[in-house]
Image (tube, rainbow, N blue to C red; front, side, top):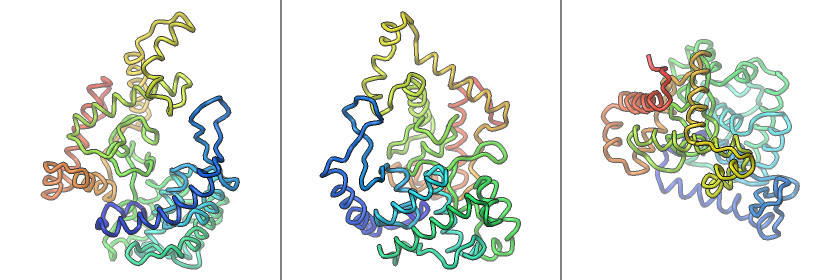
Length: 359
């Protein structure tokens, strides 16, 4: 919620905001989609019927989170308008949701003025005094930003549209006096794993280290993304195992909603259908390693986080999920603990793939 600011909020406020989501998101969704059973499949005969359609809108978690609570929109019908516009402009809803939430916060903090990104007013982005009535206003601002960015109508939005991480560095320099006065850099309000000199991708919106960890491919569920916090070696082992298993489905044309049973029998299916005996774990481990090898040659390998908010996501996860050892380490020296966790995770990736990228 509120550009990842949920990680800082006290539990009672988080519960209050959660109740708002249940009342104004979950309840109308159930009334409009679940009760009338307006469900569809992707076109294949399937029992999952995962396409939840209501009033002409297909509702998935990620777009409605990105243009919903992440961006200060807590009412389903207001989110409809924002999601539809972002989708029609051709943006990835996860990336745009993270970007627009970041824009809202940098405006709220005073790093940017509304008029500098083509807006006439500030968003309502304070979780401590937020009212559900603010949803409509924030959704309308999302619509404005999506259209202006898509059509290149604003210089700063054009810069941001070239990539959030790169834009942060440019804006740090352009607005250096504000950065100095406020005491926070543009990138310190953003969340992303970093690759090479300019590469990044904003993560799926889960409070979990696995989506910001130095894995080979981010932005997909090729990792461990449940709400847990482990030492980096254990976490990396689980994340890498999951990455390889996800390739079973991705490369085999199997919907990942069926992965629990499909992963157990897909080798037998290859043998029955094609008379092909293959060890998929070894095959896709090699594939994963070759992807990293290419990334290293392209200078797009994982590098340590350059964003304070990203480090905070890791540190607060340790406390949230009850890892006392790492919670203590983050309290003693947050940056050093984060660097150690990241580096040890990255070393396990190197060991697993046989590809070196750490300097």
